[in-house]
Amino acid sequence: MPIALLALTAGAFGIGTTEFVLMGLLTQVSADLHVSIAAAGLLISGYALGVAIGAPVLTIASRRLPRKTVLLALMAIFTLGNLACALAPSYGWLMAARVVTALAHGTFFGVGAVVATGLVVPERRASAIAIMFTGLTAATVLGVPAGAWLGLHFGWRATFWAVTAIGVLAFAVLAAFVPRSRNDAPPAPLRDELAVLLQPQVLLGLAMTVVGYAGVFVVFTYIQPLLTTVTGLSDGAVSAVLLLFGGGMAIGNLLGGRLADRGAMRAVLGTLAVLTIVLASTRFAVGTPWTAVVFFGVLGVASFATVAPLQLRVLEKASAAGQNLASSLNIAAFNLGNAIGAWAGGLTIEAGPGLGALGWIAALITLAGLAIALWSRALDGRAPAPAECAAARA
Image (cartoon, rainbow, N blue to C red; front, side, top):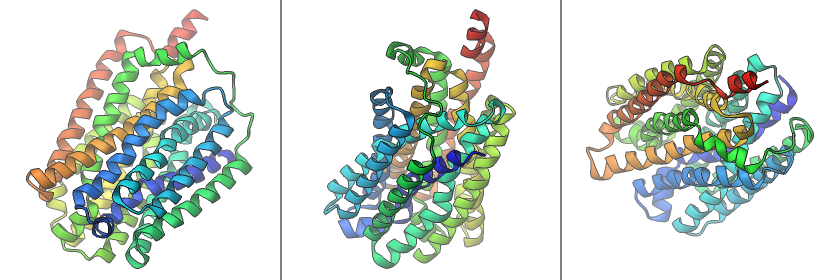
């Protein structure tokens, strides 16, 4: 793999750390800022909504800039946003800082995914995306447990100071290794880019990402209270479980890339089906410490095995002119799913049957995403893909 691809992975590591780190800090943030656990969980929803808003807006706004310039500008926004989180004096300020930080997320991964696929031969595109997303899994393996440990011993603000430092280092690596001219063709007319929003299979791909992935965050957002309240583990043990979850994500991410290289739609259906089954077992699995530890490792594998297939499916169905926008929108779709999942989990805890029912709610949501995927596959034979249309015209 080219070193430029590893530079993209470094940027993904920084962004992934700030996205997921609050899962291990919910109780500390809620206690320090005098809000409920569910309100602290909304900081994750706020971040995800910031991604959903920022992805299409910044992708369109930056469409005429070189992709390396875009990536560096986004990493600068990310770094300043985390600095604001570390200095936030109240819950409202922290929420606003999280949203600002999130604006960079979707476009970074969207543009980065397109850059990554251009760095390798066509048959390795899904694996290239998976390699870049390894930065996210590395963030959960290293960044999130380390952040939870820092928060436990030095306060949650120390975690955001550390993430700010990661942002500075990631900026330097991107500046040094991502080539400025590689894969920077003149932008297509805006009308042609926006036309991707009228392609039914692209819209179905975005929908299966939102709904299929939302179930993960119904459970994962509240991993700390699940482990401490239902399973009976100590706060200190949460970091170790997060480490195992991150290891599972790393395995699942690479597995999903390999499966998607053999057929994106088949991989989407298989991974969503497995994820539904795993989520449905949550209530039984978190009953004892040992089963909970194994469960969250398996959940890590199942959750991230879906990422590369879902991303590649949207890229395959988008026209060439709309790939940047479609890729960024799918990253936004993942995060809209995150926001919906965190909100649904909080609603289940505060106004519903409680922590013990999170797995059932999560499984039902992901099952709906699988139904959308089956609908999309049924439509595959009715119209040629954009690439096939272009080949026919040529």
